[in-house]
Image (tube, rainbow, N blue to C red):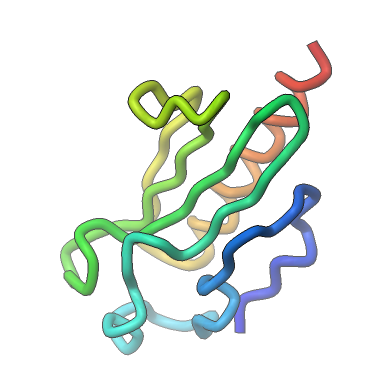
Length: 102
């Protein structure tokens, strides 16, 4: 299982933590567009999904959304491994915390 205790916002949807902290190829049937959504103050959301769903050639996509404006993410990144994903989520969370202070 993936440990999400480092998340500082309110997790409103989580299918990510049930993934194993191993190679993604053995988990392709669990990799879908909706994996994690976290709410933060000042109307920020952190969203994580695998695009395209169930495709070994896909990637995790990490988006920071402000005021539910899905068409204009404040921050966007991709990752192809669990370890890279954790780093990208931490980076996105730091961005949100910094932006919310201003």
